Amino acid sequence: MAIQKPYNDLLTRLDNTRLPQHIGIIMDGNGRWAAAAGKARTFGHKAGAEALRRAAEICREIHIPVLTVFAFSTENWRRPPAEIDFLMRLLGQYLQQELSLLQKENIRLNGLGDWSILPAHIRQLYDEAKQATANNSEMTLNLAVNYGARQEIVRAAQRLATATQAGELKVHEIDEEMFAAQLETASQPELDLLIRPAGELRLSNFLLWQAAYAELFFTPLMWPEFSKRDILLAIIDFQTRFRRFGSI
Ligand code: IPE
Ligand code: IPE
Ligand code: MG
Image 1 (cartoon, rainbow, N blue to C red):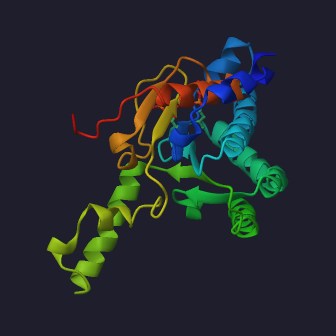
Image 2 (cartoon, protein in one colour):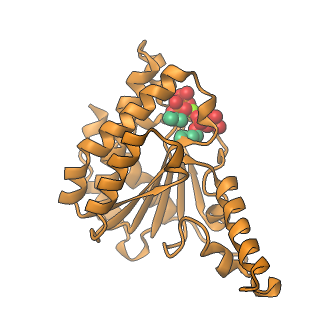
């Protein structure tokens, strides 16, 4: 199966001195992938969770410091309740089942987004996994659930406004660095590469601030069919880009 294809040839093509320090993935196309196979959307979500395991393993193997994956957006509450319910149960299973892999691979789990309104047992599993992996140091896996970049930015603005109102801060002291420090990715490396599968050419409210100078990689492949090779191919493509950052 394509998903298990060997990838050693691609490892030799990687420039280890120019690896992205932070990769973001919008895990999209689960539903369409399942529908194309005549299956229910839920089947696609399960396969999507397996694609996430492959992505985390390969990123860890080649020493990417931070991987951020978009699992559920603030807009995904608009979906039918049965699908939301399934996604929440899948998240619970993921947190439970992947913990041993995260430990074995020395990966730290970190949630992005507002988890406070998620079902209590999910929050508990998350708290346990976060605590258990807190000292893992090979890679950070940011799991974005009930995450929206606009909300993240608004919350940052509110915190700075509160501090200003309390007299702890002057308006002219607020700069990009201070603002970024209020975001959920504070103290993490800049987003270098943003991957969006499933042929959609938009960001869907993911990491808007952080994506300012990220290299964007769009592909028609659906997320469940993403192999370790496909992740490596995206990184190899990233390494061919000339990043000017506004210079010439
Ligand atoms: C991404 O796949 C998973 C979530 C948004 C939770 P989709 O469920 O959006 O799949 P498509 O885009 O309908 O194919
Ligand atoms: C983005 O995918 C959110 C996640 C992958 C979690 P969507 O499928 O929700 O995005 P749109 O609706 O196509 O923009
Ligand atoms: Mg989608």
